[in-house]
Length: 253
Image (cartoon, rainbow, N blue to C red):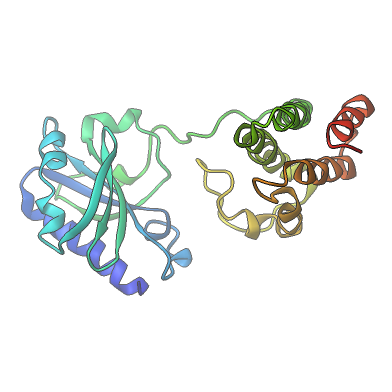
């Protein structure tokens, strides 16, 4: 999908909201918000429709303000406030509908005003709740979690619980490695998603990203993945010899 078509559709949604009667603003988020330099043919439309008090449910129940622009191929309500939606022409949207008096309690990244009704303040695209990120956790905690997740995952592997093993070793343990990235490599200049830590990880930590393939070898290779994760951690941190030995023993060597 060409980027200019995405922006054109977003502008059309703004026009549709303007005609709808009880809408107040349309805020573009992410690559169609303040990060337009990231917009490419793989982007989707992330937006918030801000409406009058008491109007949200009518905009959620009747999506004609969207379908009048192009037929909808698929949609489902993924939250109480919004949908994921695919247009027939291939444009994919994730959006929420928020009443203006709810805004002070809704966390979202600062966005771009695509359209607003006259009299609506310019700062409507700036959140009062600035981040949905969890508090930063200590290196000691993250390292301990990664190591113990590996050990638990390998025990599940021994029992034949491969799915659970994969989640612990290649899921939870790798999540902790991702959180440890700033202790391993200096972050490069790339925009960071305040809600999803793995977004644009390859641009922010290119050297570490190249090592992750060995840590994520798939459903049938949990022991091999666990050994790669352990090796990576040992390269950068002081790993408990007892834990390292236990993990290697569970891997069979």
